[in-house]
Amino acid sequence: MRRELQQSVVCLLVLAAAGPVAADVAAGKTKARACAVCHGPMGISNAPDAPSLAGQPERYLVEQLKAYRSGKRHHEVMSVIAKPLSDDDVRDLSAWYASLVIEVKSP
Image: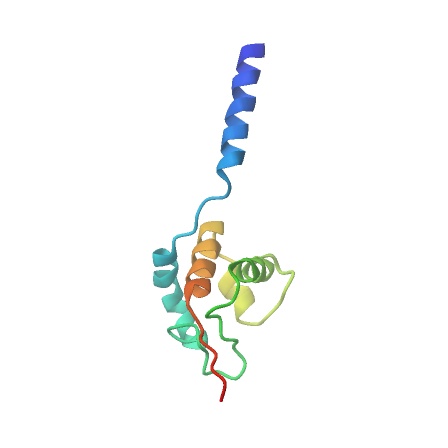
């Protein structure tokens, strides 16, 4: 029994050291097609009440999508859209939008 416990602990430590599952940017791009209606095909919104998502920090996007999904943050449309998203969906979408480079130029 002690040997099994030691093996379990070692396994958990190896998994913990591996860190979180990496997001799939390509999958996020595909999933983002549904978001394009409000947030634009490249994450730049033309709608006055929808924010641009391109170039936003991945961690921020993950937190906001999870907040919509849980009901902690409410928006008439986003609360419904985010509800069925899996953790993988959230990571992939966030990685896609964070991967888009925004360039700011001085006038």
